[in-house]
Amino acid sequence: MVINLRSDTQTLPTEEMLEAMRRAPLGDDVFGEDPTVNRLEEMAAARMGKESALFVASGTMGNLCALMSHTHPGDEVILEAESHTYYYEVGGFSALAGLSPRFVQGNHGIMNVDMIKKVIRPENIHFPSATLLCIENTHNRGGGTIYPPSLMDEIGQFAHKEGWKVHIDGARIFNAAVASGVKVKELVKSADSVMFCLSKGLSAPVGSVLAGDQNFIKRARKVRKMLGGGMRQAGVIAAAGIVALDTMVDRLAEDHSNARYIAEELIKIDGLEIDLNTVQTNMIYVDISALNITADRLELLLKEQGLLVSPVSPYQIRLVTNRHINSNEAHQAVIIIKEIVEKVR
Ligand code: TLP
Image (cartoon, rainbow, N blue to C red; front, side, top):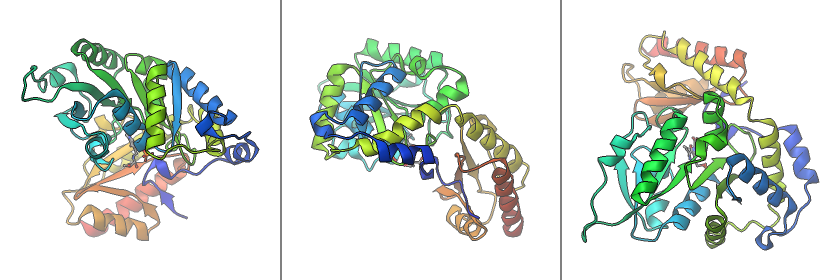
């Protein structure tokens, strides 16, 4: 048996999703005629409390559509220094959106208004004009950390006063909502747009959604087409997304408690460092600097024992709980890690 803690992106569709995919009424979504896509977009817009929504192939595509729809080439985009958009999206913000980045160093990915104020530059002929602020909630490289709802509002209001638009990379916004006991709508109300993924903890095989006001989504729909994301009978995958929204949100709490359990057990092992404060949702970042091996080597040793994890820097691994991991497997994962660490220490 393999225990896969590499990412919640690795989750497989449920039987109910596969059945829904088989039965989904279909049409050409480029013509706006796929009833299943339309239904998912309406559902998603309602959940996000926004006027409109757009089904996209991936989180990366959703973020890029947002960036390109909010800005013009040459503008400055304000990003957290470890944000996914900067770190893992192949530099699309610069290569395709033509944006110049300005970084804010957050606290485990979480920015506040003072931190943002520090990077603001006055209007000057030498500087690009900032037009967009991006917030990642939960913050992946921060450890799956959550923005307190009031902080989201404070930052949103501040950004709007500065004349910037606000986009949320909410790939895991439902994890944030479940962990903080607040409706997603509340978390995103001060943002102009939000992208969330159906294909992570929610277990759909493919797809993300971008939500915002009607004009914004109209522009984003065109950008999506330009990027090759006009997916025709996309209802076949949107159907799984509908089931994901209907059935997979509340159970994220189970992933969070399994992550907490794993983290609390792993910190008891000599040679492993975890900042427990950052274990707020379904991720555990483990620092292995005290061991004599690299994260790549540890990944390999764990794989030989049937445990899959992700190296995320030379001496750091990441574990992500998901619906294929129950409490027994969480326990098993701890035992495997303990045995290997004791061998290499
Ligand atoms: N994250 C993946 C990898 O790309 C690192 C993962 O395994 O965590 N925003 C955030 C915050 C994400 O974590 C991800 C994916 C995305 C956007 C992009 O989503 P996809 O993979 O659908 O393009």
